[in-house]
Each structure stands twice: as C-alpha cells, then as structure tokens.
Amino acid sequence: MSIFQENRAKIIASSYKHWNIHGKKVLDVGCGNGIVSDVLRKNLNIDLYGTDIIDYRKRELPFKQMKVANRLPFDDSSFDYVMFNDALHHIEDIELLIIEGGRVARNILIFEDQKNFLLQFIDVVFNYFYSPKIPFPVNHKTLEEWCLLFRRIGFDYEIGKIYYPSWYPFRHMAFRLVR
Image (cartoon, rainbow, N blue to C red; front, side, top):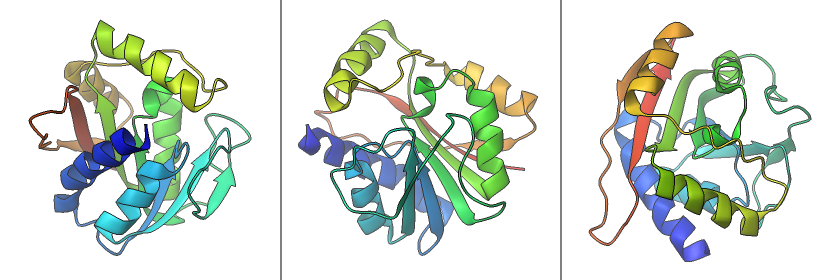
C-alpha cells in the first residue's frame, strides 16, 4: 500500500506546487502513517509537521497527537500552511476543523476525494487496514458542497488543477483557502 500512497502523494504535491508552498512551515492534519507527509516534505521542500488523533506513523516526522478531533494542539499562527490530505471526510464536524486550521495558519490546502459510492466503500476498506481505529463517518462532498461550505464559514478559495497518471483510477479536488 505504501507504493499507492507514494504515488498519490506525488499527485497531491503537483496540485500544491503553484500555491507557493516551497520552503514554508506546514502542518499536515490527519498525517496518518506519515508516508504521504514524507513524500510531500521532499517533493515540495517544506518544513512539515504532522498531527492526527492516532499515532501510527511509519515515517519519522515532527508530530504532536491531537487529544480532540476538532482541536489542533498548536498556538495561533504557528504555521504558514495547514493541509488536509484526504482527511476531512473522516471528521464529523468538518467546518470546525477547517476553522481551527485557519486559527493556526493563514493558508489552508485541501486535497479530497470526489464524492462517489465506490470510492467511499474503497476508502473505508483501505483505511481499516491502515488502522482499524480511524473514524469512518464517510463525509465526502461534491465540488459544489465544498464551495458552499467554504463560503458559509468565511473563507475565500481557489480550486486547484490536478494532473493524474493515465493508470490512476480515482479523482480528487484540491483547494486553497484564505481568510
């Protein structure tokens, strides 16, 4: 599975490159096992920190465990960017966590699956093998639902372009949020 994660991380990195993230201090919320974080750190040349509600890292990176799912254990304005890479659909209160991300950084990057039943099913199955303790509210959204949410909670946003290898079966959305 790490080969799949590494390839997905390269897709994420290519979607974030044009948002001037190079050399910045970045928090990866929901960093999971750290494989994606490690690839992003190298490909984007960023100072990356991780946080998650469960610590099941397989890669070494600075890490602080979240005690509560919608509260980030960092001071205000601690980072240049906060990123949520395929993590928000695991959260019950997405709005609260995005607002919390805006507390610790001015810029938020989001990479999420496009909503469809097959992908939701696959996500639950794959994540069970990463860690059976991962929450599964299956909170995927459409592009329109994301844009409505961002406007409702007071964020301006840009929609990113994503370039996929021809063999890659899933589709995602990328956003940059600022207040």
